[in-house]
Length: 95
Image (cartoon, rainbow, N blue to C red):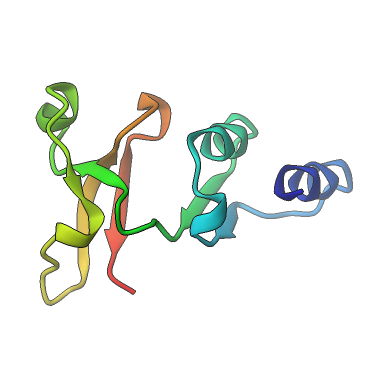
């Protein structure tokens, strides 16, 4: 359903740069679908989602759960999501 809505927006030449989703739609397949169309995404992640805190950790498959992350006062950390390298580097914020 989400992909069809994005497809319809693109067909109708609706100008947008980002797709905002909740954790229900935060899958590798959906991220790949969005980025393959030249768009960016912002998505809530489930607490058990795995991320690496450096590119080296990502390459060596050293991941931590999102609910174990320590957020600074600014509220953001840089992380690499477990999965496709095409969308590996993302900023993560505590909601």
